[in-house]
Image 1 (cartoon, rainbow, N blue to C red):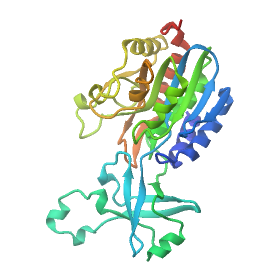
Image 2 (cartoon, rainbow, N blue to C red):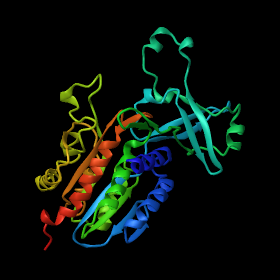
Image 3 (cartoon, rainbow, N blue to C red):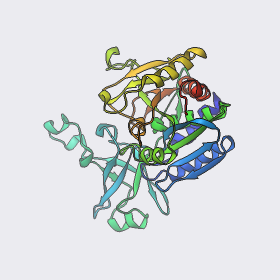
Image 4 (cartoon, one colour):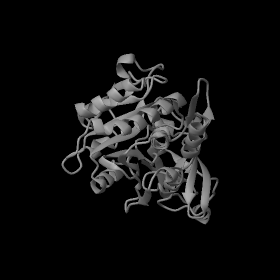
Length: 351
């Protein structure tokens, strides 16, 4: 479990907002290289690692990007206004420390807003919106900001640090979806499959599933699995009926997400994953959700259609700076994926 923990820490502390995943891609390439026959980066930025073999071919998709921010305006006093990139819950941004990524290096800043001491009663009772927040890098003028290399379009990520909690649980930013990337890498290490595998680190998932669309079109896989996080309940504020997936109970196999607007997993894929879990005595959970979707939503619509499923690692507090998961679930998710790849020929016959 130590190797999994160390790799998750390295990838989650690294930075790569949607559209700027290059640094993450290079880290992942280094990890995958010993286990595949070829690695390339396509024109959109997807990292595609190919392990050659026979049909049916399997595409594994794990998105590289994280949600973040982008500078949209620099005030004359040196404060920065920003736009959100991806699905933020605005309240989680306030008073966070951030990293601004310039051509000349990283710059630290903090997100501020009007202090509560100067708010009227009705203002204090309302959530503060991202549009009313700003980034303070300590500068006293627009000119000082520009001297730091910050400009309109500079990307911003949370300055999050990996920490270990009780019961082999850990917390950091960007587990969505660096956890999925770790699972993909770990499964490639463990599998001894005779079938062709495309391990794809997709880009721009958080802003429209963009990389998955182009990668799946190019690769034309016979079957696919998206690896992502799944919302874990088991904590105050969520009733069991609203979040049935929990930590330490194994990977979540998606039956349907986004009320069917995302993926309705084909019975053939569900049977493949459930049978594999049963055969190797891997605990798993089934997931049906109304909100959120993954790369599977676009992969399964590619060309004439690709049978696609989702393996999700249960994660609390998704899309926040303090996402939390269990290393045990990463381990069992990787085991399910590795064994499923080896069994794919029994479930999908290609003429």
